[in-house]
Amino acid sequence: MIRAAHLLAAGALALAGAIASHPGAGQAAQAASAAEATAVNDGAVRTGIPRDLAEFGFFADAPGQVPAARVVPYRLNTPLYSDGADKLRFLYLPEGARMTAAGDGLPEIPVGAALIKTFAFGEGEGRRLIETRVLLHRADGWLALPYLWNEDQTEARLALAGARIDLVTPRGEAISYRVPNKNQCKECHGLSGEVVPIGPKARNLAHEWLADIAGRGLIDRVPDGADALPRWEDRGAAGVAEAARAYLDVNCAHCHRPGAMASNSGLDLRWEQHDPKALGVMKRPVAAGRGSAGLLFSVVPGKPQESILLHRMASAEPGVAMPELGKATVDPEGVRAVERWIAGLAP
Image 1 (spheres, helix red, strand yellow):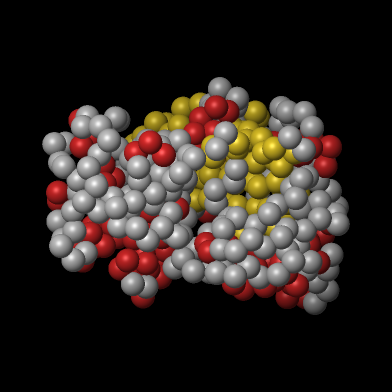
Image 2 (tube, rainbow, N blue to C red):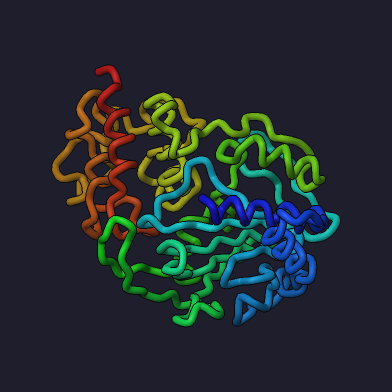
């Protein structure tokens, strides 16, 4: 949390072109100065496939994840579970460009922009950067590229074929972490034949952050419906349904929605979907494989133990576990949130 706050401060200062001058600003001022001295390579964002993450110039200090000028840190209210990885997210907009609000969904992001996300495990001196994924908005569409950090934590190199990394999650589980290959990126980011961003929807972004970037001219206005999903750490104060639906929207709906990879399942788990059958309530699966465990319906109101959706979320077994990509372990907090929602549904 301390690191996130520091990055937010550094990014804000870099963006504003302001360098703090009072004695107490020390570290943030140094970060801001470094950011000002580092310009993003717009040519690398728009064309070619750089072999090294450094060629983009997204960071003034890449191992420290200190963003360059016009690279803005952000967080999602409810994040996608990735085996407990700490995710450091950034948005880059080139000079003179701005986003356009589009309801509570994904803002219209201009060509030349980039979304950057670094996956890390560990805290403090023990933190280890694993991979940085970039989404580049080019004239012919979005391009997703994965970059793998080296053992010395000094640089990240293009990993088109993906990779496997042995590590231990924050819950102490030893796993073989998968860095997706270039094609696997499309499995989550594919929609109607195109690659699209799936994270920074307005409903999952803080109103305060959106108001800040609107004030800086990086988006035309605060989108309607922004900040609707609860902050995951505050989900206890949100309604049971809101917490569960937010989790399903973020973790499942990029595949389980019309036009996406798993659209043939007939499930539509998006936040804006309100049809019980589309959400899986008393809906029979389209195939009765071992993933269903002999259960008959995706969601059985009042009976989470008889619901295929929860059965698959609670499994780490390949071929059964959902989501299929992006994690190797069960998220017990997500399982509990969805279990409570199903248990509270009226039969």
